[in-house]
Length: 508
Image 1: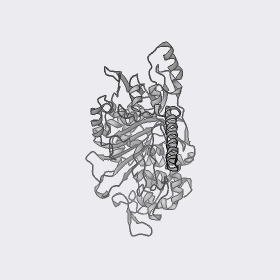
Image 2: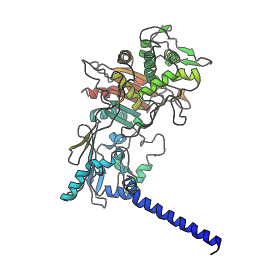
Image 3: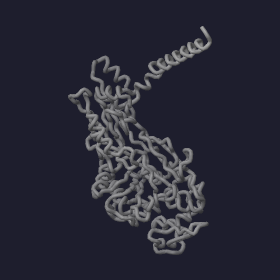
Image 4: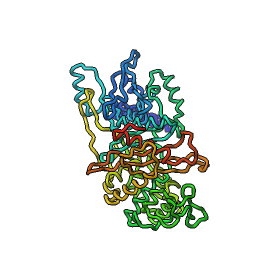
């Protein structure tokens, strides 16, 4: 055999061995990975051949279940009142498998989770029909409905989140516009595909996007809560010293650019020096831009990080997008850009500051909880097919030193003063609320574009009891509102409707 033929023969032998090794690895060593992949079409069909478990709200309300059918897939996934909860539940598609909570807790819902191994063995021995486990969420339907109904009835788009500050349990998570997961779960693949395409899945404003956890917006004046906390924690300022500019406009350092208060007004009618408490109560940009400059970029970014900014691995167990104080640079978005002018603008929640509604709710919750930030969580319990408990989730601390308890008390006091200037729609005067509103310009023509309207709030704890609820609402558009809209007018009533529902009042 001559040399060229020998080389070809050796090459063919090597390729054959490599092919055999790859087949062995795929079919033997890595088989379980492919088998358990929830997007495996064969697995999807197998999962629909048995009863998938339920997704339940905290009071037992069924958010997702499976009903017997007469077709080859045997079970149809159903979502009672689907659009109200779709941002949380997601959907189960015959074509692409599970999404949202259906994906996050897929192994429990299918019954394949190791924690259900004894149940599977029992089914095998007794001949009982296999069924999936169930997932009980932390969602409170009263609060969820209050937010969803108000936003949809007024034609708003945006998101709302409610958290129990002492535990981190997410009591509501609403994203509108929403979608009907029943249409996407159809066994008619053509109908399901058409329903999916109608939702513009590649659009940044698609209803498929969970805006509460996966969309970040300029937070406007709600970011002043971070600036104020940083100032207090670093001894830069206190609540009652009148040392901040109250005039209607200041010049950004090193530029000829003016930074204005809303409508160019002075701070609560005071064009002289004002206190931080007055600046919070009247949401004065000139004061807080100056305060951010005194705090400094590194200290402000560090305080934002203690609240949860920049965190890329937060799971509730749905994935959560990071909130940022600067542009993303190789995975780091915690550097405030453009020097002192950029710091001033960041201090009022503009520039490159971006927050998810969940992050803003976490800020309110940390203040409400005395400076301790709890891990946000959507899952309360995992249940066996017979609804017996498999795992209960306990509260987990995310950061026990966001601020001192004394700073949290000062922040609460200032936010209670802010609530007096935050509108009265849906307000129950018997409920004490601490809040901060925000109005954020955005887009290519910000002066002629409806701003983002924000409302962050909580009910302070009383008589030694923890705070029952903290909320964050963003209204991004809708309601036939114009560029003069402020968060107090649009987001405030949504937040107060949620608070009212949590406190047993159905008004609004």
